[in-house]
Amino acid sequence: MKWILIAIIVLLGAGFAYIYWQNGQIPELGHANGQFKPLSDNPNGVSTQASDPDKRVATWPFKTDQAETMQAIKNAVASHGGAEQVSETSDYLRVVFVTPKMRFRDDVEFYLDAENKEVHFRSASRAGKSDMGLNRQRHEQLTALYHR
Image (tube, rainbow, N blue to C red):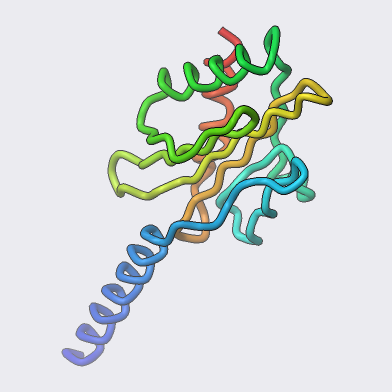
């Protein structure tokens, strides 16, 4: 019985160590010709460009112009809180949200499609299989803040 308990503790420790390691890995993201990298098969992300309807979220309409749209996105992110800006160009913004309790990192990207006057969104957790709907909730919260 003692060995079973030790084995369980070791397996749990290894599992937590793996999740911690995943959380520290910085993914190569961005867009190519307006397309984000595809989401993983895990149910821990959402995107306006997802082929899976369960992972798809709505785009946002542009504000008056691209500069005002970018500023509105940054204002929504700042109002939401818990994010660190990683990179920005005139048509792209990447931030990392850190969950308060477990300190999980979620990479969030915005692509401003000037041709179609819409904002594309991608949010995915770095670690774990499921995010318990957090990335979809974040999209909904940011959407409400963006439309204020």
